[in-house]
Amino acid sequence: MKTFITILIGLVASVNTIAQTPTTDHTKSKNEVVTTDQIEWGWLNPLRGDKSPVAGKLWGDRTDTLASGFLVKFKKGFSSPPHIHNVTYRGVVIKGLLHNDDENAEKQWLPAGSFWAQPAGEAHITAADAEDNLAYIEIQEGPYLVKPTEEAFDNGERPVNVDKNNLVWLNANDITWVTDESNVETAFLWGNHQDKELRSTLVKLPAGYKGEIKNLSDNFRAIVIKGTIAHQVKDNKHINLLEAGSYFGAKKDTTQTITVKDDEEAVIYTRTNGEFEVTKTE
Image 1 (cartoon, helix red, strand yellow):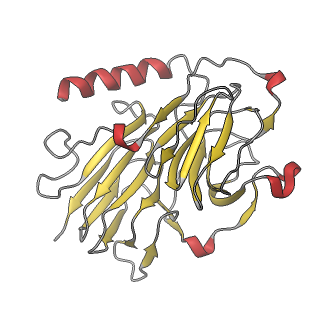
Image 2: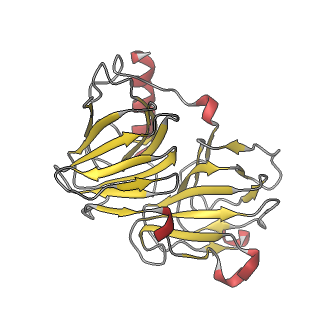
């Protein structure tokens, strides 16, 4: 297993050397929370009106030039026309079934917990097939634009579709920043996990888990993909109940206290410029 991890990290690092997408984010994150009832919704593509999915702001501004993260809701049966984007985006399915590929590709319906990446300039369609379909979308530079396929180009990156059943989960026997007794697992998604560059992981917390996440980098952002957690900045009395689709950010060297409901595990998507530590407290 450890040999496989080394090969995987080396492969990710080599891909980043030819990609045009920024590999770091100089914006310093802060202690902030967006619960699901605080999300501001609007059309993802205003030019298409009600034919467009709706988007909910979590952090950043997708119409600006910097990085941002947002939610997208798709109606059942939605299928976009073929198009490209001017920037690369990455997505994680939170609810439903989503497909993202070339217009002639056979449908690969990605269930909740799956991950995909769409390179800038590559023609594709996006479709949805469940009653409720929700995804977290992230870009490392903006603005996020939709353009016709006649403007397609190759930026050196390649698309990725990873069904949740194909994720490789690691525990404390394989990684050093999770304590042995915590039963926390993690799956690497993208980025270079050896240097202080942007990287992303899914962190799986067991039902009833009580612990802490300490941010050690200038930039740390997290989105709840599955389950419900009680979140609190250590030494702050205010507690937030974060359901799937909620967001929290953390300043460097701050500790976030996390408690998971007793009846369901939680999965958190993390995006960070460096390391963080996960420690069980009870």
